[in-house]
Image (tube, rainbow over all chains, first blue to last red; front, side, top):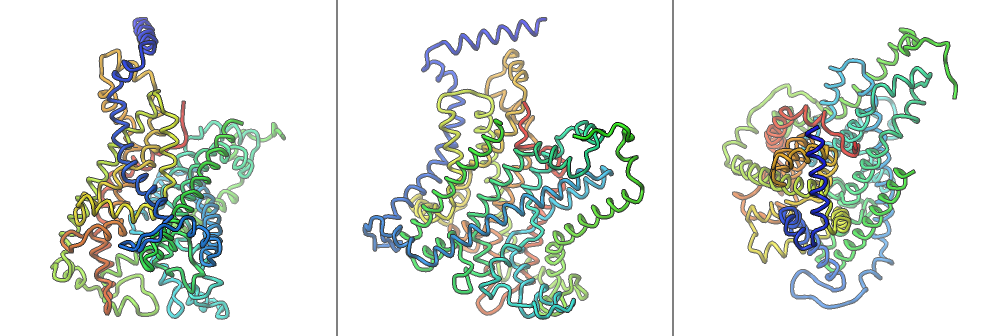
Length: 315
Length: 292
C-alpha cells in the first residue's frame, strides 16, 4: 500500500518535472549530459575528425609530406578504371558473403548441440573449450595456417598425399585460382567467440517448456529448429551477422600476413589496397579515397541491415 | 499440423536406446572434431616454444616436443635480445588503462541510452551506429598526424586515448542495461539516491555479466593489438610485447621458438582472466535478447 502510494507520488513528480521549462530540466539532468558528452567528444575527436580529414585528403594528391595539391574527384575516377580495385571489390564481396554465412551457421550449429546435451557438466565444459581459443593471439593463428598451406611441408598437402590424392596437392596460397578459397578457410571451423556466445546466449533463453510442449506435439529436431530455435534467436542471429560483416570488411591483417595480396593482386581486398597505397606507394590521397568508398559502403550495409532487422521484428 | 495424441508424452521414451546412442555419439564426435581443430594452435604454440628452430620445421610435424629445451625462455627472460619483461609491463599498463577507460565510457553511455529519455537521443543513436562503420584504416593516417601534433608520439597516452571509446561497447552495454527493471530505479529514487548513485549502485552491479565480457574483449584487443602501437611507439623500451616479439622476426634470422615462447607467456594473463571470469562470460551473455 505504502509502496503504491510512493510510486504514485514519484509518477506525479516526474510529470511535474517534465512540465518545467526546458533549460531547467536540462540543468537538472546535467550529469547525464556530461556523462554522454565526454565519450561523444572523444568519438568526434578520434573517429570523426580523422574520417573527415580523410574525405578532405581524398580530393588531393598527397605524399604525406610537401607534395599536396587539389585534384578534385580524380581519385574516384581512377578507382572506376583501376583493375586492382575491381578485383579487390569482387574478392571482398565473395569473402564476406562466405564468412557471414559460415560464421553464423557453424556457431549456431555448435551452440545448438551444446544446448542439447543432456549432461549439464559436459555442456559447461564444451562451452569453455569453444570459448577458450580467444586467448590465442590472432597473429599466431595466421602463422599456423600459413604453415598448413605450405606447398612443400604443409599439413594439407601431406594429408592429401597420405590418403592417395597426390593429384590435388598444390601451392594453395600461390595459385590465383585457389588463394581466395584458402584464405576463406583460414580458422576452419569458424567459431568466432563473440558470435558463438551471442547465439548461445539466445538459445539458452528459450524456455524449456517451449521445447517440451513442441516435443509433445510431435515436433522432431528439424521442425523444432526451423519453427522454434531459429525464429526465437532471430535478434542474436542478426546481430552476429552484422558483426561478422563489419569485422570481415575491415579485416586486412589476414591478407597482409598470409599473402600480401598476391600472387599478383589476386587476393587483394580494398582494406589492404588502402594500406599498401598509403604506406608502400605513399599515395595518401588515393588511399583516403578508397577509405571513403569503404566507409560509405559499410554505412549503406549498416542501414540496410537495420531496416531489415527492424522490419523483421515488427512483423 | 499433425497432432500425435496417441504417442507417449515424453519424447525420450519414444526413441529407442539405439537411436539415442547414435545421436549422442554423433554430437560428441562433431564437438570433438571442432575442439580438435580449435585446440591445435594452442598446443602447437605451447610445445613449439620448447623447440629449436630446426625441430620446429622438421617433418613430419610433431605436435609434442620430444626433446624439450628451455633455451627460448632463458634468452627471452634474460632480456639480452629484447627487454621482454619490460615490454610485457608496458602491455599490462596499456591494456589495463584502456580497458578501464573503455568500460567506464561504454557503461555511462549505455546507461544513458538504456534508462533515460532526452533530447537528441535518436540523433545520438544514429551517430553511434555510424561511428561503428568507420573503417579504422581510414582514420589511420589522420590519426597519426594528430598524435604527432599533440606530441604523444612514443607515449603510452598516444596508444590508449584513440581507442578508449568504443561505439560497439556503448551499444553492448545499452543492450545489457535495458533489461534492468525500471521499478528498481524508482525505488532507488524514492530512497533518495542520486542519479549518479543509481548508476553505480544499480546499473553497474546488475550488468556485471556484460561488463565482464566487454572487459575481456577490450582487454584482449588491446593486449594483442599490433598495428597501432607499432606506429605510435618508437623505442624498444616503450614497445608493447607484440611489437617487441615482431622485432625477433629479423632480416636474416627468425627466432620462431622465442616468438612462440613470448606469445605463450603473454597468453597466461588472459588465461587467468578467463579462468576467473568464465562463469560470468558463459552465463550472462544474452545480448540481443532484450527482455522487457
